[in-house]
Image (cartoon, rainbow, N blue to C red; front, side):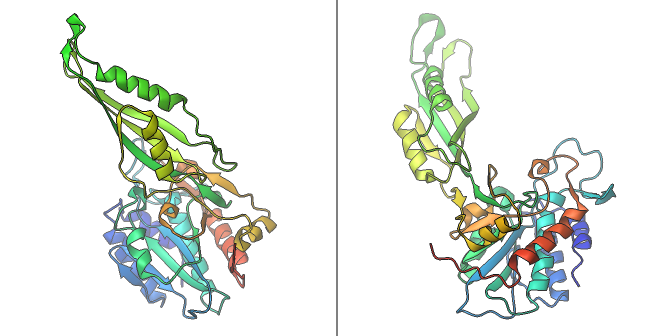
Length: 351
């Protein structure tokens, strides 16, 4: 018997920061085994396949993550103590992404009881908050071919059909050292400032109806060691949020072509994602009165090479905040929504 609220309370009590999820994975594995789901495990990723698997059918993945960020400053109560108050459950990971994790599990438990017109896999993944190499990207090659996924991130139970990608750029401007009093050298800080001004003002041509324009923000800058020495090096960091109309590589190349600084991306693997409005699951969601939207926040969708969308209980604005909480009724509402959306649904889609 799956009791989603009890499972969520137990998970809150187990610290599961990214790359430190072993204890939480051990607990969840025991829950899945006791329920008779025959879980498989790779490092701290757990998955279960419905008993009616048929290679002739498409496959639906239900995914949420078990890791959390470390507690933010300002918690008045212990972040690892589940507190029930006024119909809400408070605790680290309650909304991001515990609510979705247990709601999808409860829905999986019911959907697997009979044959569906699709194969069903439930995946609780690790290292989502850091997009770690031992998270979902390590386990997807071990799964059957996936046709579509629902990701249980907090979306207030509305379908997020697109999300921004992420690149972090490390930039280095080079100059020549000299004495500040004699107007010597070439000031690397000034060269960097010219590039930063371009970053501030540049607008990429393609603007998404769902996600808006590509967004670039300079967040860190470092230069100089002495007040009277012209700095010969200035480094700065740029946070780039890419819409679904560009690949990360396309955006990187455009930035590199305009800046005099050396520009290096830490990674281009976290791309933007989008699912078609014509997909039968999205059309079914709209028929239920749900409103598709574009999400500014990153998730494991960035690492999924197949159509996916986010749909889960909880408020994304509470993620990573002190006193994170989730409305208990929203978990019941999520389970009901998943069952209404998925039970007996034909998910085949050919664009």
